[in-house]
Every structure is written in C-alpha cells, then in structure tokens.
Image 1: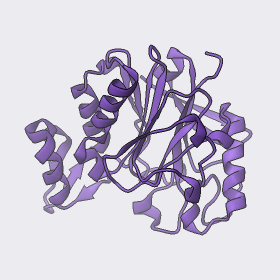
Image 2: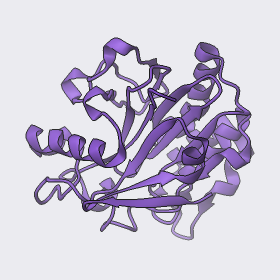
Image 3: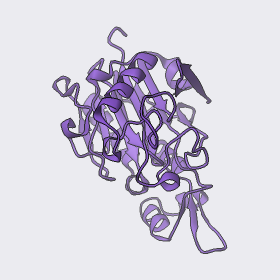
Length: 273
C-alpha cells in the first residue's frame, strides 16, 4: 500500500494510506522540510542535542501539530537507547516531549489514551507505528539495527496484546522511511546479531558484497518480525524511501554526521472516534 505526501504551508510529511483508511487516528512521518530551524538543521528538525535552539524545536512541534491535526503540546517521547524496552504512557505523561522531560529510557511507547501523540525519532533508523482499531491502542517504535535484531517490533506487539487485548489480525502497522539496503553497509556484527534471533529466515534480506561488507534491509526484517507476531501481510505498510539516498528530503546520520537534524514518526488516537 502506498504512502501519501502532504504539503501544508510548506511543511511536508507522509501518511500511510492503510492507517488513514482505518480511521480513528492521526499520524505522520515527517521530512526535513517546512520548519523554522536554520542551517545546518534546515528546516524541520526535532533533535535537541544537535545544537538547534529550544525555541526552534518548540515551533517545529507546533507547526507539525497544526499541519497534521495533532496536539503536539500533549505529545510524549522517550530517551532512545537502541534497546528492546517497551513502556506504557498514561494520561499524566502528556506533554513530556522535550528530551529532559521524557519519562522513560525506551525505544517503544504504547498507549490507549486518546489525544496523546506518541513519537519516535530517527535519522536513518526505522520508525514503526502500530494501531489496533478494535481495542483502540497505538504504538510508536524506534528500531535501529540493534533494536531490529532484538525484535523490538514483535516485543511491542506482544506488549500491546498483553496490556490492551490487541488482536494481531486487526493490528495495522506502518514502517516509515529509513536507510535502505542500498546504503546500509555493515560489517559482520549486524547480520550475525540478526541471524542469532531470526536464523536463516533473515538471509533473504542480507547480502554480502564482493568487498566483504554486508547490506541489510532493516525495513523488511522489521516487517518479518511483525508477520511472525501474526499480522496480516496486507496490514503492514513499508515506506519505499531510503533516508541516505534522499538527503534533500530526510535527515540521515550516515550522510550528514552528528551536526544535523532528525525527523519523527508520530501517532495519536482521535479523542472523538
């Protein structure tokens, strides 16, 4: 299923068509286009540690909220640590979106509280949004290669099932833009870690090149984890863009290094659904 680009007064973000069709949520996968941050963070940046100002980042959150119909003043993020830690967000956590206020070290957040946007940061890593319209719960996942190898996508789905009664056959997932297999070149430690958990089933997403390096498709490996959890393949959307290839549209750690911005994937239950 495709993704749709939205341009609202110059602020550009994508939505997953399957998630949008189900209804009952608002969501977005941001780009680097349409905020107020100056170079080298130009222009839609959500990373506070980069050197951009707090005022710029607050305004970027506000602009995104206005464009996507999300109350970002109630958003909640996490302190991402490349783990498989999953945390649950309560109503009292709303508004903890700036780094120093974030309630958890974790790489996945879940909630059943309407009107509280959950988000995950990225600048090459996979971001994954989950939604069960039957039991009304959502999740936002950051999956770098370590989290991907640890199966954070599956562990978040299992936590959603345990806490909220989610049914994997009714859960919808969207995997956002991230570095593609075309550009994610690694040594053997990455494929070894992935194969340790997924064995030979991951091999079709790992290619060894003539230079001895490996190219790994993290998006498809995360999709594989979700299918192992019982999701209908038709309910898992995968964004085609590689963040490193498309540096004019996305932030990429491998392309730009440490002094750069970052995008987010965000999802919230609608309050009146």
